[in-house]
Length: 583
Ligand SMILES: Cc1ncc(C[n+]2csc(CCOP(=O)(O)OP(=O)(O)O)c2C)c(N)n1
Image (cartoon, rainbow, N blue to C red):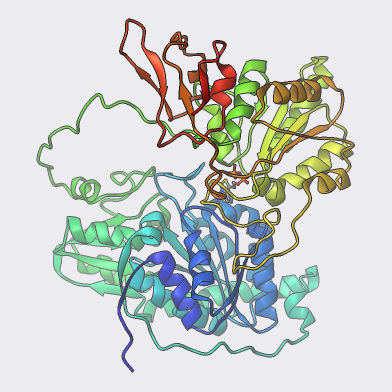
């Protein structure tokens, strides 16, 4: 049988392969650069897949699916593994029934993340295998390989990508399509119940499994030696392999497709066969640390390849001792284009008010994090998903102890609230904090491209489902003071926020305006009456990209780009001269 070649991204390749490899159940939580894997799986339509409220729930559901005999896949971004880590580290002990893959997408250089953690550390930490594909074809092949490894060694397998692997497209020749096969669902208490007595036995098995995997790593073609010129030998994996091939196409290479556990024998042989040994790995020096501990001499490693950001062919060339030709400087003095809210986004009104009220805002992760940037400057801490409410609780308690009357304001989106904000709010109600929480319920996971969540009323694979009622949920968590408000009406919003900040005790405000991008909301656009505009620039405080200055007279006046304006009218409400109106 001949299979058609396709040009697809790494994420699409993973979805296709899971669907071709007898996959039965997939669950994930959105996060760049992993998100498209689940979306593609839903589009392919052959495997049941769903969005979970957070990564821990996704992985736990996948564990259940594997125990019940279905091959299973969980997808998330690197920081998602922190949320799922509690399950992951004990899953290493229980092992699996049907094959289980945890796809983790790392984000070196952080184009879309709050940190740059290297997920290879989790494979070491959990003592499980990690596959590190270098292109879309390998992404496809490693899913099937991973499912087989998982079943053969009774272990979860991490399939780790990085942004370039997830998003770059390459040619993929799919393999044979396997029918989903559901194995028996067996009760096995010592295997799946990690009481201390069973867990002690399992820990020994985990160590034995790691040794068996190390043996496997020595012989598997996943770890490939490419002997060329022996002056320079490079050990590498994942996308770094592509940069190595660009920088030193004639060098010998040991390419590690199985990046954990490492094969000491193979590494020693390779090091012995080349004159200078270089290790090229993005982010942490995980290979280097282990290879040095094997007593192998490393000539070039993290002393030359940076710990921060992405690796490039030029970085590797310089590390290998080459001098780069001078390059013409990129165009200088380009205006900065910081990210900002979409024109018409409901978050804009909220931060206009919070900025005016000079509130201390304990923020969270979502589109609203942009409220921290000028000219709003209205978010003062952002740690991780869900931390906004819990941190506001801590701030409120210290204020109480210090006798300070100020009330912190937590701002959180609906997806983040369902993900990990709910427990923080439960804590706030239980331990009674003097804090205000604003939930921006735009009925989608906006930041990652508008995915469904328990508040959107829709499923990943289409079809309606129960839509969580935010007010009922918040009340059920123990909050008595819950008020809905509309952030598009600045006067009403300001009054509501002031009241929330002045009323003692935990207080929740909910804004229910839908995401304009996801739901394609368009209102009548606005225009500026050039006669009435005084050029005072008060409207520019909302930082809307539809607003611009036209320097016709002495004083530049404001104009609105009709192609961008969404008609939200927040700018108009700031104009004291009634110069902005519906067109
Ligand atoms: C643990 C973790 N998982 C996933 C992400 C990726 N991510 C960033 S913000 C966000 C959710 C944003 O949705 P919401 O809170 O509804 O706010 P919106 O962007 O719609 O305003 C997600 C999934 C992350 N940063 N951390």
